[in-house]
Image (cartoon, rainbow, N blue to C red):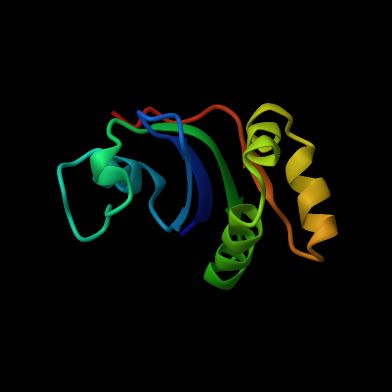
Length: 109
């Protein structure tokens, strides 16, 4: 089982950060009409998956998610565009676990 941290762009161009164990299911949930699991994105649909990272444990996923949520919009844009930025962030936040970046994003439609 994978643990994922991801960034999606919403219809209003905001960037949402989340963590999940099933990336494709979670993106589908974000794009459904109102539900208990997509409060922020339900009024900003559709969302598009921009970047995702896999880590080994749920604890690591939550720590990475928290670190990304503290980032400015500009930093999040860099995380999306430049693959090495996630490793710079991890070092800055002292996240000492392996992060696998996902660049060939799965089809989530």
